[in-house]
Image (cartoon, rainbow, N blue to C red; front, side, top):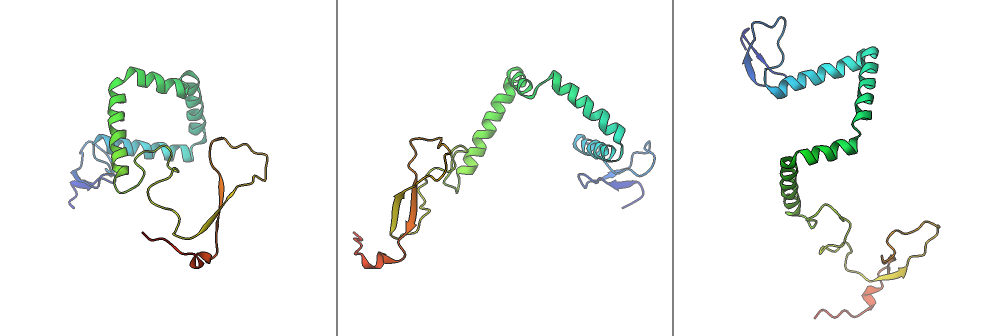
Length: 162
């Protein structure tokens, strides 16, 4: 590497040095690399400068009091219909990629029954589950059972394999 070039610490690209910059140039001029440089500066400043950290915290507090998170998101979605459509398409693509090779095509209800059996072929005893505490069960129509292994007695039973 010559003295007129440098390697960007963010993107690892090799670039010509900017002659107007004093000192050692570490970042190229791309937007993502400059944002990385600013983020690093911000983290270092907050870590070592208590006054800056306090002013930044107060500034964020004031901003959040004017723009609560739930309102900000709904206003943003309402004013950016193109974002909604793009996000919807990306989510559909993510759902499809999750469905390939897994039994769960959707994000919601990942604990539902699948075609793959979680239980090995044995003899089991299903008993009603007795609650020992006073906590409510949210799903009142759910069948809750206790699954006990029979301990190898299945060898004594005839199995119809037809």
